[in-house]
Length: 186
Image (cartoon, rainbow, N blue to C red):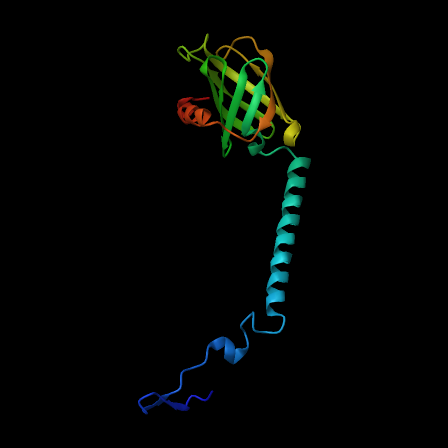
């Protein structure tokens, strides 16, 4: 429509004609172009495929190299010390476990966690706190932790701390306990 076009309204007054929508001028409306909607759907599918393939590549790289710190996070079961719940923030890992109100906090380097455990009643070394180390093996649902611990920082090492992966869920009770575990220092 020309810019100098005029129309008459109901009262007979002459006024400029309204401008047509931009997509009508340039033919850019995606659903009004021949095949426009089909092109939008196809573009969306291509984007999803690229994202999926990118995720596969990242997963493959992570499994070929050392596991990511996030592989430690979730619910674990230890035959020696009961249920374990683990959260990871950056390179820091916090653990709460059933035995004696147990807690542990430390750092992750590759497939190894190094930290400090403590238990009630006083969470003090040498009787109720000390060093701990875990090594993560396996991947996916076949993950396992093998660990060693000691009383204080100069006691004899004990290698009887193992756990197997249960799932990625952390119980509401464990969330509350993990929030309090931040006061620990490795």
